[in-house]
Image (tube, rainbow, N blue to C red; front, side, top):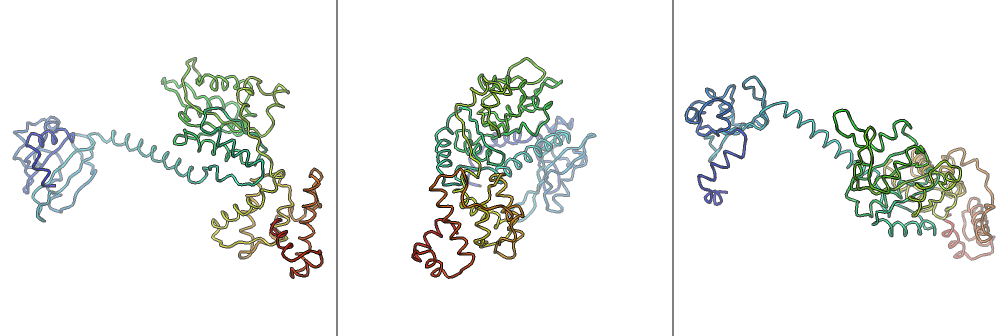
Length: 446
C-alpha cells in the first residue's frame, strides 16, 4: 500500500478525512488529538485549533480512545453516550512495526434511532431475501422436472418451450393434484422474466372478502398504496391458482389488468401501470363455467388462447414408472435411505391403481411407504389399505384393443413371477423363449 500512498498529496488526504466519515478523530500514543474533522468539531462546539493537542477525554464526552490503545483491541459499532443520546462509534488502534502509536475513531451513526430504523429495514430485507432463496431452492421447478414419456406430456413440454419467451397469458387446466404449479414455474423459468419474481395467489384459499385487496392492493390512509400480489409481481410472473374461484365482481378488474396492464387498488380511482405476465390455473373446465354463466366470457376469451390441458395420472399411466422412480429416489435421500427397491407385487399394485389424487397422491404414498418399509425393501404389505384392496381387472374398459392385450399380457406374466422364481420354467409354461420373457418383463417394468 505504501507505494500508492506516495501519490496522495496532503490536500487529497485532507479531503478524504473530511468527507469519508461524518465525524472522525485521530489521537497519538498519549491519547492527545492530532486530527479531528470540521463536522465533529461543529457538533462538539469547539474549534479545531482548540481541540488539537488536548487529551481526547477532555474534548469528547465519555471517550474510550485511550482504553483502545491500552488494550490494543478495536471497538466496532460500540454504543457511545454523548450529549444526551447514544451513538455508534468505531475505535481502532494504529499499529506500526508491532507498536501502538495512536488510534482513530469515527462515529458511524449519530442517532441510535437512525441505527434502529436501518437495522430493522436490513433485517426485514434479509429475511425476505432468505425467504425467497429458500422458497426457490425448495420448490422452484423447471422443464426438466416434468417427468413422463407419454405423447401428451411431450407435447405440453414442447408448447411450454415455444410460448415461454412471450408475454402472452397462459391458462392451465387440470384436476387437483396434477401439478399445475410445476408447469407454471417451468414457463416462468424459461421466460425473459426468470430473474424476477414468481408470485402466486390461490383464489380458493383466501376469503372472498379479502381477495380484492390481496390481488389489487389497497389505498392506505397515509396516502400510500399497500401493494397487492399483481404489483408484487412487477417485471415477473403472477400465477393465479384456481381462477374458477374468483368472484364475478372481480373478474372485470382482472380483465382490465390483463388488457391494459393497469391495476386500480381498493379505495381509489387511480390506475397504476404494471408490467406483469399472467399465468392462470383452473381445476374445472372454464368453458363449461362460461356456458353456465359462472365465468365471464370476455375474460375467458382473453386467457384461453394458450391453454395447457394437464391430463390426470390415470390417463397417462405409461408415465407412472418414471414418476415412481423419480419420487422414490428423492424421498429415499430425504429419509436417509439408499438403494430402496419395490418388490414385484407392490410395483404391480401401484401401476394398477387409478390415482384419483393424481401426482400429489402418488408423492404422498411413496413418501409414506419409504418410512414404513423395513430396511430398503418396499413390499406389498406396506402399501396403503385402499391400494391393496383395489379390485384388479385385466384391462380398463376405455382402453384400445392393443392396450387391453398389453395389460392382459403384463398381468399374466406378473402372476407367474409371483408364483415362480425360475424364469426358464415360466418361459416354458408361456411357450416363449427366456430372452423374450426378459424383454417383456422389462417392457412392463415387472
